[in-house]
Length: 520
Image (cartoon, rainbow, N blue to C red):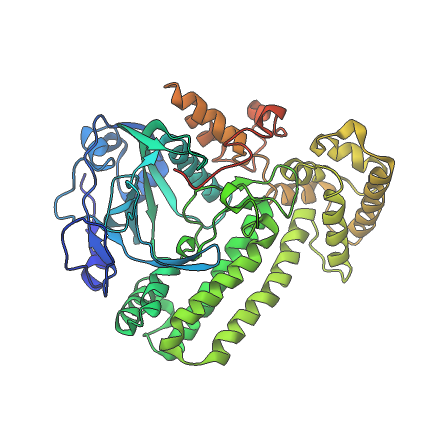
């Protein structure tokens, strides 16, 4: 492979002087060198040809033995030196100190077609940041990460990407639900790709240690590499930098809310400084519309990272980033103003997003009331979010009396809607129909616009689990079927209609379909 390799991160940021790969506190350094673990019998299961092309890897190279070896950590490209990044983070609201890449090892950086990418392996072995863990990953979590990162990209949501999914050939011991029932699972490695894997925690760690010199170094590097349009690093630039990170974070979360994506573990070490969705662990997609739902069993009691709380957590995390950047800025008012802009921006952008889901282009003072009434009505009985909004696009002006029929497939108990609930739905459809009278678009044009923001296909939890169940038996065909399906989430794809369906009853309480843990 003749890649245009770069070494910007390791050249411009301070390295851990200790070469030994032992677990330890790493001070005054942004990374530690660490080589991937050699694996027993690596096998590539799937490759994103689209992502390979973006890196400058040809289809012939994808099929080569070298590709298998490099992207499972069994061979290093010439002039590359793998490393793990140092960062800290707040986990479930509490400062956790040093965390770092405990099972991610960055292989190299590539420049292709004027874009720079960092390429890393997740599940490739221990690093100085592995703490008590083994640095490995298992097949079930790796399939979920691989499929979801590419699915999110095609939904138009800012995200890190995935290049390849591979079996390591090794067995890995995991306690899937942290309940004392450990078992061996197939080991796997995902090759992840992003312009940068820097997180909020990459800045917090140095502020927490009062290492303002390294803090300034990493902030200046980030601005120079990824926010150069803001100008030369200075106090004013730092303020602009924080403002842009805040806006990118908000935009990303608005997208999550639009499609019903629940990240599951929005700790500050899982928040990308570029506003990208990162670290696909115990994530999930809303089946029934529910502001209180979270897929993460670790968060079952307090539901901190529930669907309806994601925008608030984004703000809380930005407060932590503001505290980290404060030593370089020393202006409380400037930072507080940006955080206030996030709050008002959320109200504005959230309403704009809901207008788009409802096919409303004109602005009306009562739109907020229409949206609130819809959300309240959606909560009255279990209603599939994806199917409801997709089918709502078939509503035509004057269709108020047909409204319930148009969306009936979204109800989990469609034949048994209580009279009071059915009446509330009729009332809402009357309001919606009246509101559509103010719209200039034809029914057909509105349908097209709504279908461009309301996906028909998302990676429902049970779909990923079916692929995992097959893969555990050695059948990997469903991974590709879902990968191809999710490349066109807004298209009708009538031959794939079986996936445009509510969660089956068997999946309601099945592990991996309704509840997940951070164990991977």
